[in-house]
Image (cartoon, rainbow, N blue to C red; front, side, top):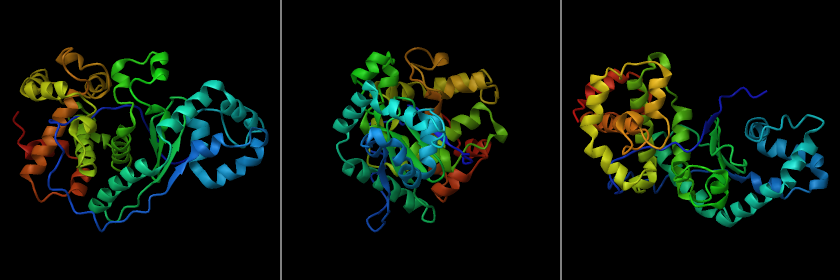
Length: 336
């Protein structure tokens, strides 16, 4: 039985203002080393002798541990590897024509580990700079038949490479995915999504005060965390949002905040209100069709930026552990 909490992440956008790099004064990580274990599960799996699958199961159980059961139970949902019928079910997955076409495309887009591993090593070198005593996860790649983009536990980050084949990938078009969904389904987004999910895993929302204000500031904290672990990337890559929509957020910052305050939405606790402001979509309904989805999260990021700028003694670790969101708003002196 899987006892650890598992987070699943599918194409969630995050927001920053401009299209420049995040910080011209990056920390010096030249002497920080990380031993990032990087495993290509999909290659091991699809290279299995299909006629001897049962003989390979102990290998996967030993090498991939809890991830192997997560993959079976939660990702492709075929049940336990200890079930008598499991080898036949797995064989059907591995011999499926479409799955093999997906595997070929994944190998074309990701022919080796070098580039992705190097980028993720940099992410976790910055992580070790800010959190020197925290361990780094094992990174595992897989194919999910488009079920999950990224998942994590407290020890692993697993990446569904078939969710990063490019926004114009024929598979996505055949599935009928909306453009706003496909927009961020390209390989350069992987480090961003991994950093975001790792923040959600290591610093979960304290829902003792689960209102809209808490959620947008919490999401702002996560966004700030991501920007610190990826300081050399452009903000359009980190945010997953176009320059036009980033400009819209800046232009309408005051009006968005005024709307939330005047309509007494910030302290609403119902999920319908919270979700429509923090979930993905083609736009934020209350802000109009010209707005990006999750524009309120962009406001949360502005609050965090102001909070950190006005309180320079606060470390990233202290920020991520701070769960008094009213205090953060007050000390930020946020006035759009």
